[in-house]
Structure formats: structure tokens, C-alpha cells
Length: 326
Ligand SMILES: [Zn+2]
Image 1 (tube, rainbow, N blue to C red):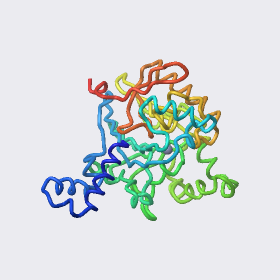
Image 2 (tube, helix red, strand yellow):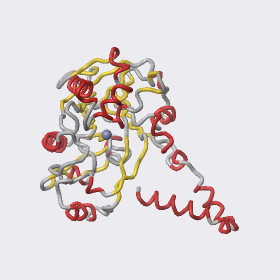
Image 3 (cartoon, rainbow, N blue to C red):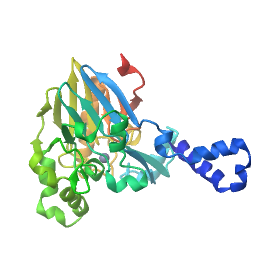
Image 4 (spheres, rainbow, N blue to C red):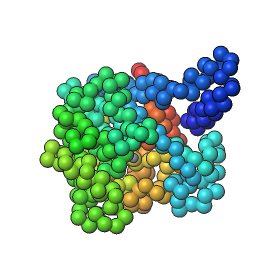
């Protein structure tokens, strides 16, 4: 992913140097430099069958951050984090985050899990779920159920468009613990204030159309919620099962395919309860590894689908290639 950024930057420099546009070859490169992300990544979605379910992951966008060790392994010496990353050919001074909502078509429903960053992020090239839903052959009106795994801004940001619900025909499903946490009056001051205000703006207007669930509850037949608390106090993950085929939507249980999976014990800045985050990561990915299940992680590298193998103190991420084609 870094190389594509570098390539784009390099091409922009080429365009900026106007004299270089003199030869046809350079003009072609210049034309590429004008391309938006949508042209470079034409579809932004990935689709496969899981039994009778049709599962589509949709890239809402990508965003680069600086200094990986300030987010992953914040309880570790930065050199230790850098060393692990270098072993996977990753830099320590930048990391790339990506945001991938999932759409599941069951027999009767079109279920959307999380809504991306929404309209507020579009000026920065994110918040593309809506547009890419169209590329994937659906309209926002087609979505019958919106499930929210937890109430961080990159998951609830796309719930509303202006003052109106972004998915006007949908009902909503969210964790009871999560809702109670973020809507408690004391959250409106102190460290959770901006998050709580965002929940007020994006989630609360929809609350009367929302079903609140807990561990073991079903969204629809074949989609079962599992408590995975820690990243947030009411963070929920989901087991999909159709015709005996299973897949886990792990949401934000692990947020970096190397740092969080290979070193599940490392503390993560985004985890509200760091130790609960660790315990949940191990519990969930022990299960994913032991049962050789495919999983979709909201922040795994696009298209965000893979497997894990237990190695040493953690897990090796195995990106899905064609395992789910058969
Ligand atoms: Zn997230």
C-alpha cells in the first residue's frame, strides 16, 4: 500500500514539473496522476459465497498514520515494535489503516455491518461506502438491516446523511452494553466526550428503530452475535453460518494484521479497556485458528478477509486468495 502512495506522489511530482509533459510517454503518466482512487481501485468491493449467503466486503477508504508504535504496542519499547514490523517489510514511521464494512445477502435480508466514516470524511477520500455499494449493485434503500459492531466514529459515521438516515428502509441492531455505555450522561464530559457527542448525532436519532442485543443473540437466522468486549465496552462480533460454512466478522478485535495478531498481548491505543482487549483478542483468534475459520476484520488489509495460524505467542495472518471460491 505504501508503494502505491509513493507512486502517486511521484506521479504528482511529474505533473508538477510541466516541462516533463513534452513527450507522449510522460503525458500518459501524467494522465494517471490525475486519476482518483476510484479509477485506481475500480470496484472497491470483493464478493464471495458462504453457503447460501453472498458476502461482499466494501472498502470505505484508507488513511495513513504516523509512528506505528504510538498506536500498537504502546506498552512496548518503540524499537521492539519497529523490529517486528521490519521483519514483515513494514516501516515503523507510518502505517496504513483501512476501513471495510461488510454486506451479507441472506435469503430475505441485505444486512450491512458497520457504515464507514460517512460524509464527514469524503473530502479526504474516505466515506466511500455509499458510492461503492452502487458499484456492487445495491442502493442504500436495498439495505434491510444495519448492524453496528461498536460505536467508534469509523463504524457509525455513515449512519446518517445530513439530517436523514443513510439507509432509509433499514432497521438497526446494536449491542445493549455498547449503547448504554456511550449514552450514559457522564460520557458527555471527560475523555469520551467527542465519541459520545458523535453517538448523539449518528446513533441516537435511530434508537427507536434499533434492536439491542447481547451475547448469543441472533440478528437473523445464521448470524449470531458474540460479546467481544475490550476494544470498546460493548464491542460485538458475529458468526455467520450457512449450509455448514462459517465465517467470523471480528470487527475491531485486532486492528493491525502484524502488530495485533502476532503480538496480541500488546496494548493498542484504540482499545478502551487495554487488558480486556488483549484477553478478547486471544480468545477470539484462538477460536478462529483452532477451527480454521475464515474471518473478516474491519481493519485488516483490503479486501479484509483471511485466516490465522497460531504461531508462538500470537497468530500469522493468511490473506484469503481463492480458498472461498470452492
Ligand atoms: Zn474501527
